[in-house]
Length: 86
Image 1 (cartoon, rainbow, N blue to C red):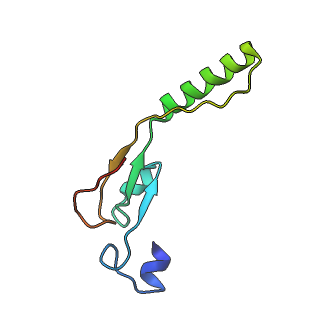
Image 2 (image 1 turned 90 degrees about the vertical axis):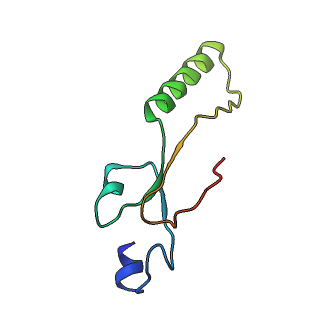
Image 3 (image 1 turned 60 degrees about the vertical axis):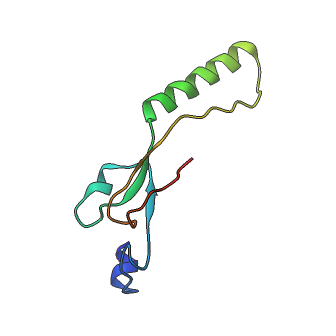
């Protein structure tokens, strides 16, 4: 974002919209206010360990698909509108 603003003189979000992932604490800093996706890391790590333990016990390496909901946190790096996030 700094390069886009300072070197390329782009206005965020008017000319460039930016979305991050993981919603780390820095995303809320006044100079950034980065729109981001927030993951439940505790649940993600717990489910991952559970799958690994089950696969070791069953001596299996089968593919596991798991969907863990995320939250969209809209801040100042995107234009405000109704987003349809799946």
